[in-house]
Image 1 (tube, rainbow, N blue to C red):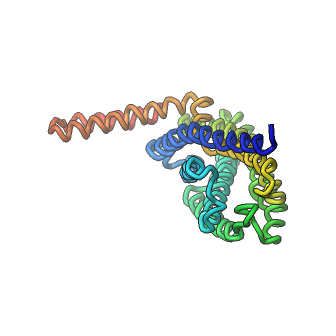
Image 2 (cartoon, rainbow, N blue to C red):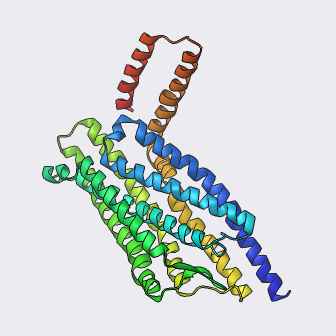
Image 3 (cartoon, rainbow, N blue to C red):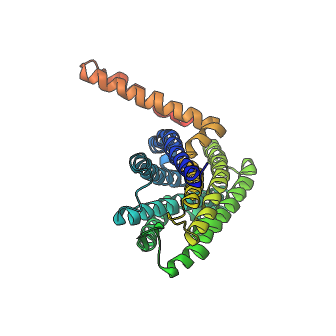
Amino acid sequence: MSTSSVSDGIFKFATQYSLYSGCIMLSFGVIGTALNIFVFTQLKLFRTNRCAFYITIESISNLVYQLLSITLTILTAIYGDDATGRFLIWCKLRYILGQTCALTTFYMVCFSAIDQFFSTNHRYNLRQMCTLKLGRYFAFIFICFAIIHSIALGSSYDIHPTLGCIILDHTWVQYSTYFFYPILIGFLPIIIASLFSMLAYHNVRHIVRRQLPIVRRRLDKQITAMVLMRVIAFVCSASPFNAYRIYAVNFPTSQSMPMAYAVGRLIQAIFASISIINNIISFYIFIIFSSRFRRQVKFVLVKKCWHRWKYWCCYINNQIEPDNNIEARNSQMESEENI
């Protein structure tokens, strides 16, 4: 068997792998992420919680990244690649959007862990230090930083005749190699998230000793457990792709070497699928490891969505009963506090 036929086979397999794995994972990802956003914005218990606010922003960022990945999957099905080597504006825009979402997702995980550490701390002044208003300011400032940083770094990408869409400026290559991938979206968020999630878990084990309302204690325990499992998944899925990107930035593979290029595409597809897991897994981790979150999802889907849909149908058919609806809403608020 000739080298060209082997390389063609590997390239075809890489393309098919990207296409089918992308379709499967993104189908689950969009559904899970949309449910995450819906649950955290619909339940009153979460709307006033800072950590839930960070998780909501992370979920929105994940949803944008999934839509970007769907676009890349469609382009792979059409062109056989992600088309970044064909259109200059798409070459830059793809990395600007991807890096903005990556930074936002990674550091919202960090903010969630930090917030839980302060929320569960035994010192009253530390618990009162972080407020929802302050959290919104921090989130807004960081998202602005992520957008500006991504525009600056993404603009350095250009199309090389044989290497495709790569960073051509040596300064940005060095920055990506020694700071952006290994530190800014590498060790720094991993260390911050891991450290503060473990400290928060340590705090919440002693939360029974403090005089706190039972609703607050239950919520702190639930959120802390969810954040800890999310951080573990984040560490396992983010690290491999960052290591691959450091290598890919420094050693881009030329299309003039078919075998090396095909193998590079296959490795890229595998690591990209691992990276996507980080953006789609939150909802499923919460469902698996939190029985209370399962009840909350069921409550939102059944008590809120289904009953609201029935209300609209009855309204259309002029069969609504105002008094019954008011009583239903009041009982719904009471049951929401007890789930």
